[in-house]
Amino acid sequence: MSDNDSNNFVESSGERTTTGIMTGTITYLHNTQVIPFNAHLVYRRFSEGKTQIRAIMPMPGGDGLAYEVLFKLEGSEPPSATYIVGTPNVTDVEVFIYDDPDYQIAAESGEIILQNFTPTKKLTGLVKLKTILQGNKQYEVDAEFTIEGIENIT
Image 1 (spheres, rainbow, N blue to C red):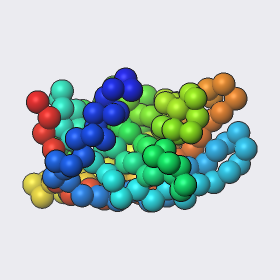
Image 2: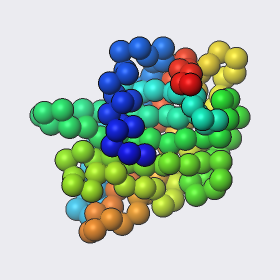
Image 3: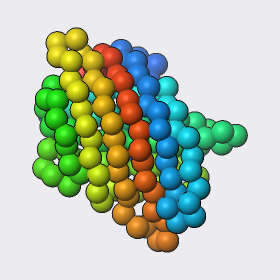
């Protein structure tokens, strides 16, 4: 994903038809700092054959900076299951730490436990992931989420 994709996503947030929350922690493994992650800006979008889940939490006092968790699952209605990071049906699993020059960091391992309440367009689940070591920094995410609605992007 390019910087422009991320910016376009945030800019189009005024047209959202989804509501959600993702709560948990982001742990800085390189210094053991634990940040509470409490995102109320959570999206579910369907585009290019994939369901995209994105949660954004502004950094306290961050002057527009944010923490972000993103992952994509194959299909418009991914079935309830445990999805393993690195398998073909889970793509673009990333953590964004916008106060870091290398802010976009891919996940190397983890899982997404998804409950899909079709046809009500509601997803709940857990996301546990560990990023790659980038420079001397590495992060871990442990969060649960609930999302209602879906946005179709053409």
